[in-house]
Length: 116
Image (cartoon, helix red, strand yellow):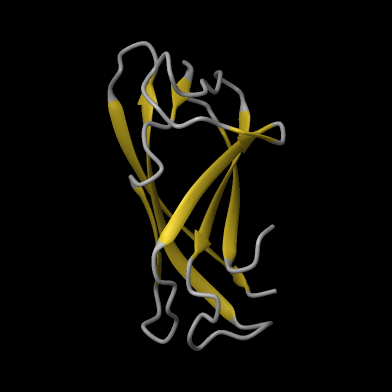
């Protein structure tokens, strides 16, 4: 895992293949004003290989039941207010597209843990 990043392992359980249309349609927002992240970059891998973002037919399709890893990386090398061992909580969001219907769906969730 890269420095200043958060990795989330997920499984596609939509019943159909999905693609990620655009890496910029994502965000990571720390829930504490004391922690600064700056802009974030989303990357994704399936079985250790980087995926291609894009519409169905151009982006890497993740099959139903497929496991994938999303990684948000902050551009702020020294996140304000954070130190190894400190707890954090963040709100995450990303878009994915149903390959069969081409409908794009927004997904939001949260993650918490400790800085390492």
